[in-house]
Length: 209
Image (cartoon, rainbow, N blue to C red; front, side, top):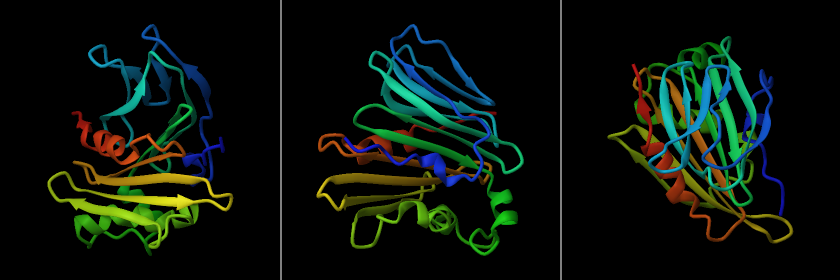
Protein backbone atom coordinates (compact mmCIF):
# COMPACT_ATOMS: atom_id res chain seq x y z
CA UNK A 1 0.00 0.00 0.00
CA UNK A 2 1.24 3.47 -0.78
CA UNK A 3 2.42 5.58 2.11
CA UNK A 4 0.03 8.31 3.10
CA UNK A 5 1.09 11.90 2.57
CA UNK A 6 1.78 13.35 6.01
CA UNK A 7 -0.75 16.08 6.68
CA UNK A 8 1.72 17.87 8.92
CA UNK A 9 3.98 18.65 5.96
CA UNK A 10 1.77 21.73 5.74
CA UNK A 11 3.94 23.27 8.41
CA UNK A 12 7.51 24.30 7.72
CA UNK A 13 8.72 23.57 11.22
CA UNK A 14 7.76 20.55 13.32
CA UNK A 15 8.12 21.59 16.92
CA UNK A 16 7.47 18.07 18.17
CA UNK A 17 7.88 14.88 16.17
CA UNK A 18 6.50 11.64 17.57
CA UNK A 19 5.76 8.18 16.26
CA UNK A 20 4.21 5.44 18.34
CA UNK A 21 1.80 2.56 18.07
CA UNK A 22 -1.28 2.80 20.26
CA UNK A 23 -3.23 -0.36 21.00
CA UNK A 24 -5.60 -1.70 23.64
CA UNK A 25 -7.75 -0.01 26.27
CA UNK A 26 -4.78 0.00 28.64
CA UNK A 27 -3.25 2.86 26.67
CA UNK A 28 -1.91 5.72 28.74
CA UNK A 29 -2.69 9.36 27.96
CA UNK A 30 -0.30 10.67 25.31
CA UNK A 31 0.69 14.27 26.09
CA UNK A 32 2.09 16.32 23.21
CA UNK A 33 2.69 19.88 24.33
CA UNK A 34 -0.79 21.13 25.15
CA UNK A 35 -2.40 18.29 23.22
CA UNK A 36 -3.67 14.99 24.57
CA UNK A 37 -4.55 11.70 22.85
CA UNK A 38 -6.68 9.41 24.99
CA UNK A 39 -9.79 7.25 24.69
CA UNK A 40 -13.39 7.25 25.83
CA UNK A 41 -14.37 4.24 27.91
CA UNK A 42 -17.90 4.33 26.48
CA UNK A 43 -16.74 3.93 22.87
CA UNK A 44 -13.10 2.73 23.04
CA UNK A 45 -12.43 5.39 20.40
CA UNK A 46 -9.47 7.73 20.68
CA UNK A 47 -10.02 11.47 20.95
CA UNK A 48 -7.75 14.51 20.65
CA UNK A 49 -7.88 17.37 23.14
CA UNK A 50 -5.96 20.61 22.89
CA UNK A 51 -5.70 23.86 24.84
CA UNK A 52 -3.89 25.87 22.17
CA UNK A 53 -4.97 28.13 20.59
CA UNK A 54 -8.19 27.24 22.43
CA UNK A 55 -9.66 24.35 24.42
CA UNK A 56 -11.59 21.74 22.45
CA UNK A 57 -11.97 18.00 21.96
CA UNK A 58 -12.59 16.01 18.80
CA UNK A 59 -13.36 12.32 18.36
CA UNK A 60 -11.40 10.14 15.96
CA UNK A 61 -12.47 6.95 14.15
CA UNK A 62 -9.63 4.93 15.69
CA UNK A 63 -10.53 2.11 18.08
CA UNK A 64 -7.87 1.56 20.76
CA UNK A 65 -8.48 -2.19 20.65
CA UNK A 66 -6.66 -2.19 17.29
CA UNK A 67 -3.25 -0.73 16.49
CA UNK A 68 -2.89 2.77 15.10
CA UNK A 69 -0.09 5.32 15.03
CA UNK A 70 0.37 8.93 15.91
CA UNK A 71 3.11 11.03 14.34
CA UNK A 72 4.29 14.50 13.42
CA UNK A 73 2.86 16.39 16.36
CA UNK A 74 3.12 20.18 16.16
CA UNK A 75 2.69 22.61 19.02
CA UNK A 76 3.81 26.09 17.97
CA UNK A 77 2.72 28.92 20.26
CA UNK A 78 4.40 31.49 18.02
CA UNK A 79 2.24 30.57 15.03
CA UNK A 80 -0.72 29.45 17.14
CA UNK A 81 -0.86 25.95 15.66
CA UNK A 82 -1.64 22.57 17.23
CA UNK A 83 -1.51 19.54 14.94
CA UNK A 84 -1.14 15.77 14.93
CA UNK A 85 -1.61 12.95 12.42
CA UNK A 86 -3.16 9.57 13.30
CA UNK A 87 -3.33 6.54 11.03
CA UNK A 88 -3.87 2.81 10.78
CA UNK A 89 -3.45 0.54 7.75
CA UNK A 90 -6.55 1.88 6.00
CA UNK A 91 -7.12 5.48 7.10
CA UNK A 92 -5.21 8.65 7.93
CA UNK A 93 -6.61 11.58 9.91
CA UNK A 94 -4.88 14.93 10.09
CA UNK A 95 -5.97 17.34 12.84
CA UNK A 96 -4.94 21.00 12.70
CA UNK A 97 -6.15 23.84 14.93
CA UNK A 98 -4.81 27.25 13.94
CA UNK A 99 -5.18 30.77 15.26
CA UNK A 100 -7.10 32.77 12.66
CA UNK A 101 -5.78 36.10 13.92
CA UNK A 102 -2.18 34.92 13.54
CA UNK A 103 -3.00 33.55 10.10
CA UNK A 104 -4.26 37.04 9.16
CA UNK A 105 -0.98 38.54 10.37
CA UNK A 106 1.19 35.97 8.61
CA UNK A 107 -0.77 35.71 5.35
CA UNK A 108 -3.08 38.74 4.94
CA UNK A 109 -3.53 38.13 1.19
CA UNK A 110 -5.43 34.92 1.92
CA UNK A 111 -6.80 35.29 5.45
CA UNK A 112 -8.95 38.36 6.06
CA UNK A 113 -11.19 39.53 8.89
CA UNK A 114 -13.85 41.33 6.84
CA UNK A 115 -15.24 38.28 5.03
CA UNK A 116 -18.12 35.91 5.74
CA UNK A 117 -17.81 32.91 8.03
CA UNK A 118 -18.24 30.55 5.08
CA UNK A 119 -15.35 32.20 3.22
CA UNK A 120 -13.16 31.98 6.31
CA UNK A 121 -13.65 28.23 6.37
CA UNK A 122 -12.45 27.88 2.77
CA UNK A 123 -9.42 30.17 2.94
CA UNK A 124 -7.37 27.48 4.65
CA UNK A 125 -7.98 25.25 1.61
CA UNK A 126 -6.61 28.02 -0.60
CA UNK A 127 -3.60 28.56 1.65
CA UNK A 128 -2.55 24.92 1.42
CA UNK A 129 -3.49 24.14 -2.19
CA UNK A 130 0.07 23.10 -2.97
CA UNK A 131 -0.16 20.25 -0.46
CA UNK A 132 -3.33 18.90 -2.08
CA UNK A 133 -2.47 19.21 -5.77
CA UNK A 134 -4.58 16.17 -6.65
CA UNK A 135 -7.66 17.82 -5.13
CA UNK A 136 -8.92 19.59 -8.25
CA UNK A 137 -12.36 20.62 -9.46
CA UNK A 138 -12.31 17.62 -11.79
CA UNK A 139 -11.80 15.26 -8.84
CA UNK A 140 -14.34 16.97 -6.56
CA UNK A 141 -17.25 14.64 -5.80
CA UNK A 142 -18.99 16.42 -2.91
CA UNK A 143 -18.94 19.78 -1.12
CA UNK A 144 -21.23 21.66 1.26
CA UNK A 145 -21.30 24.36 3.94
CA UNK A 146 -23.00 23.66 7.28
CA UNK A 147 -24.25 27.08 8.41
CA UNK A 148 -25.31 25.82 11.85
CA UNK A 149 -21.91 24.46 12.86
CA UNK A 150 -19.92 26.71 10.51
CA UNK A 151 -17.90 24.20 8.57
CA UNK A 152 -17.20 23.47 4.92
CA UNK A 153 -16.35 20.00 3.68
CA UNK A 154 -14.97 18.83 0.37
CA UNK A 155 -14.44 15.27 -0.86
CA UNK A 156 -12.31 14.14 -3.79
CA UNK A 157 -11.85 10.87 -5.66
CA UNK A 158 -8.29 10.79 -6.93
CA UNK A 159 -6.80 8.26 -9.32
CA UNK A 160 -3.01 8.12 -9.17
CA UNK A 161 -0.70 7.46 -12.09
CA UNK A 162 -0.56 3.72 -11.43
CA UNK A 163 -4.35 3.54 -11.35
CA UNK A 164 -4.65 3.41 -7.55
CA UNK A 165 -7.79 5.23 -6.32
CA UNK A 166 -7.71 7.39 -3.18
CA UNK A 167 -10.52 9.10 -1.28
CA UNK A 168 -9.61 12.45 0.28
CA UNK A 169 -12.02 14.53 2.39
CA UNK A 170 -11.31 17.83 4.11
CA UNK A 171 -13.44 19.81 6.55
CA UNK A 172 -12.68 23.28 7.87
CA UNK A 173 -14.64 24.59 10.83
CA UNK A 174 -14.79 28.03 12.42
CA UNK A 175 -14.52 27.65 16.19
CA UNK A 176 -16.37 29.55 18.89
CA UNK A 177 -13.38 31.87 19.32
CA UNK A 178 -12.98 32.42 15.60
CA UNK A 179 -10.06 30.07 15.02
CA UNK A 180 -9.86 27.50 12.23
CA UNK A 181 -10.04 23.74 12.70
CA UNK A 182 -9.01 21.63 9.71
CA UNK A 183 -9.56 17.87 9.56
CA UNK A 184 -8.27 15.82 6.64
CA UNK A 185 -9.06 12.15 6.09
CA UNK A 186 -7.70 9.99 3.29
CA UNK A 187 -7.66 6.34 2.37
CA UNK A 188 -6.77 3.93 -0.41
CA UNK A 189 -9.24 1.36 0.97
CA UNK A 190 -12.53 1.13 -0.95
CA UNK A 191 -14.63 0.51 2.17
CA UNK A 192 -13.04 3.15 4.43
CA UNK A 193 -16.15 5.42 4.46
CA UNK A 194 -13.91 8.48 4.48
CA UNK A 195 -16.68 11.10 4.18
CA UNK A 196 -18.78 9.49 6.90
CA UNK A 197 -15.86 9.38 9.32
CA UNK A 198 -14.82 12.93 8.49
CA UNK A 199 -18.29 14.31 9.20
CA UNK A 200 -18.53 12.26 12.40
CA UNK A 201 -15.27 13.83 13.56
CA UNK A 202 -16.04 17.45 12.62
CA UNK A 203 -19.51 17.21 14.18
CA UNK A 204 -18.11 15.72 17.42
CA UNK A 205 -16.16 18.85 18.37
CA UNK A 206 -16.80 20.04 21.90
CA UNK A 207 -15.64 23.50 22.89
CA UNK A 208 -14.32 23.77 26.44
CA UNK A 209 -14.12 26.79 28.71
